[in-house]
Image (tube, rainbow, N blue to C red; front, side):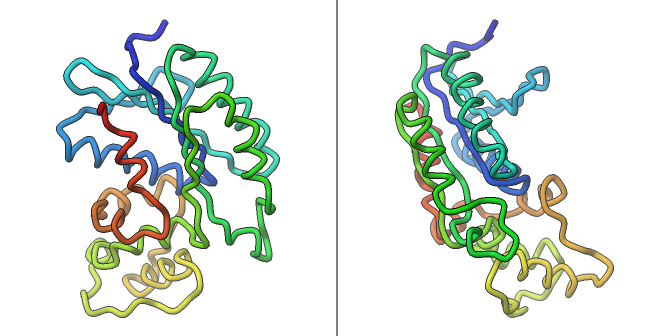
Length: 219
């Protein structure tokens, strides 16, 4: 039995653990800006959040793909946990991934995997947006470079490290801050993500984050 009368649903299907944390924190900051509340359902087996404002509710569900072998499971998850469980609402789906990962030496995904996932769910979604670019989630986080420096206690004149990927750059910054302090992905990146300026990131990120802002609204 669901306790809310939801007006719509938002589903994030993300590439990995750090993406999951980022796209958990992003709606929280949007809600804080707008005077909305967002609450995690700790009793649910799903990664489930409810956004509320003036007796109106939006449902948010997040699924971490993790690997190419789980792609089919993610489509099944959307049909089961979203569409079937909440059949009376429309769904906006965000696919969050790094298109450049296909070219890495060790890759979890191959070109076309996300397209096939999109095709398998599009008949049951009101909209699907690809939050995708040749950038990893750390590249997005580094759009608030001063925020990262402040979190690490580094001088604001610290130059951006060299490297093709944001993950490499952030690892270098962590080592520069404290050689004994390594950057960890996933849940351990949450404290850093929580300090970042989402407005700055939204305006400069290589992915169209503004589409999330539009979805997290009752208009």
